[in-house]
Length: 254
Image (cartoon, rainbow, N blue to C red):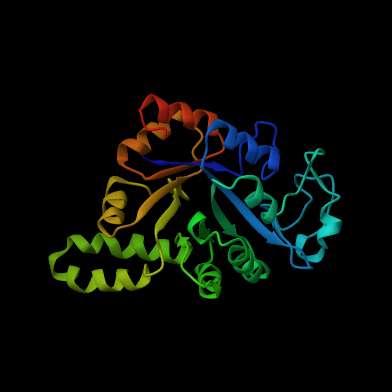
């Protein structure tokens, strides 16, 4: 079954990364939640996309410069508190989490939280920075799943087409294996700056190396169907309701 991933939970009212949004996604039957993490100045791991509170809360300031108590007074959309990772794990014990590590300040706190809750099998570590992602992995007592950052995705896109060249395959494959040594999934946009990323060849080559392909952030049902027809292994969506409808129509909703 393809993985259906609720992007920052599910809220049509802009309450992204709130417990209300996560609860709504789980209420629809979602078992995979995508979220972002930042850490307060006193080391509390929070679920929040931006570095600062300004865009979606009634407060202001950079999370890394604020204490957990100061952030606790902020309200997403004026109504919902900013949740902690501890609260998310406790509230949804049967759920898996795709964690986008947004800053270096969160590397230690993410690793500590995973160790504290022993949720290695329920977490996938993601980051645009492969250095930051790998820094988290090195701090863990055992492996979690992980998705490629920008540089590893770029290396895959540049080198993997060479696997089809007989004279080059023998040296390209070991190089890719090395580059992808700690990667389980390629989580990518369908296009990047107008350049197609998720193509039949991209999916085929990823599968040939044992990698999953997750496309983000897909909110159009027709595009969801097209990507599923291509063979993607997961879709990240703001419209958890529409993605569920698509998967149910294909007999692929678990």
